[in-house]
Image (cartoon, rainbow over all chains, first blue to last red; front, side, top):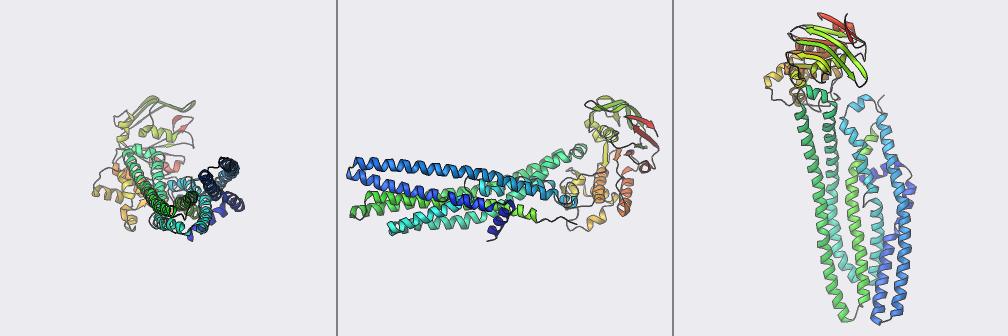
Length: 324
Length: 212
């Protein structure tokens, strides 16, 4: 909840929230529609193949081709608009942060190491804006929820048993990710930002204290400090990468287990005559949509939690008020 | 002879800063150089400290001519003290293995002992590079303690007393007295009154050195 408030504050700072909502809403239907179009295509195509009807198969393929083309044209247009929005959004945050810091008194500036300010202007902004410009980010989380809901509803209507089997593998996966990966990510990401600030300060000292360091033969001392803080930063980053790797390792394990169970159960239903091959293929497609949606959601949440560290530090900077 | 300067000239690109400077300073002598801002006082001190290489002429400090050898014989305190982003102890030792006794003596002489004792982490207290966590006077006294700990025969003071006021001034002046006792001292300042106590005072003007 607090994280949501932090994100809300960042959006208020950047402004133009309405444009963001509109663009995200425009982006929402794509994945769900693609899943539905592909599932319908596979179902009808395999049924046409089963009947040996070449004419119907050609029609289905043509419809699918046209549908896909329109869908990708729409998606490309929305993403182009979104990319422009994000570039301006990042620029606005950086400008406002810079303006705020430059209005602080010298006493306030000098109260923190220079590396802290440089980190706030650079890597904190980069970390926070990853909310919108990383490969999987906030809009993806919204899109994935829509995709999840649509795929789930269709699967429940189509075959509630298969839906139950899929959910039995998806829910533990999401829970493990949230409890053991995403939750720890905020703490790890904050630690990375703090280490980055110390590292920048140590790097800065090599330049700003150059005369004193040369005169007192302290270059090795400063370089050693820089090396130590670089190693600490590396270790903090490594922690995040380990958690990501753990998440990535879980994906094939849970995915493959679910796939095999549905294949075995579906095969039995087909043998019993309660399910056609086309229906099983479509069910697999909806399962794909559901899994892609949940994976996209999990990864977006991990990225959002990592970005929260930067968001919190930006908000913290904006909270520093000018002293009288 | 502690410092020998002969026909020294120095320029930043096309801009000539120092012209044909000649100066001899005996061991234990305390001399002052006065001049307006930008006249080249700090450049002359950086050359004397071995921070800049001589372009033309000779600088000899305690018999050393190479900058790396000159630096071993010189300690310097500047007006705007930049501290390392490290502890007070590390700022004094500069990472060198100094004995606790030597550090304590440097702190005593720089009037830091009482203040350090009042800090929760004592001498291991972290200070910012611009002295953000300590006052200007405290930062300057840490720089003086660093210079005392180096125990170099030549001490250079660049506007070291120009920005002092009130109580801070007293403590810093006392610390500077401990630092310069028995040493060859070159002070530069834009205010002639800061150079009281110098045996000779020179005026740096148009890149040339004149008797003041």
